[in-house]
Image (tube, rainbow, N blue to C red; front, side, top):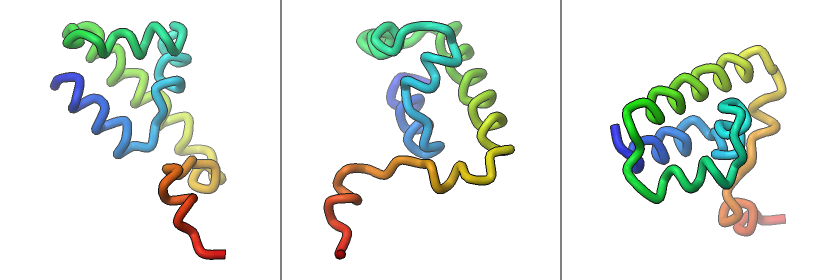
Length: 80
């Protein structure tokens, strides 16, 4: 698994990088900087663990689907 795979997984799961950073206990900027170079095996494992925990936290939240953010392009294209 590489950086692009992680970014794809985050997008598919509708999880934001800031959420993963928060779960990892690091600043969002630090997390984003990780992606400047190829992620280490340890970083990938930490990210995957954080994603699993976020998904588990969200699973009990019945309103989670309503709270999900939508891409700006999707919002801008809505008919009123």
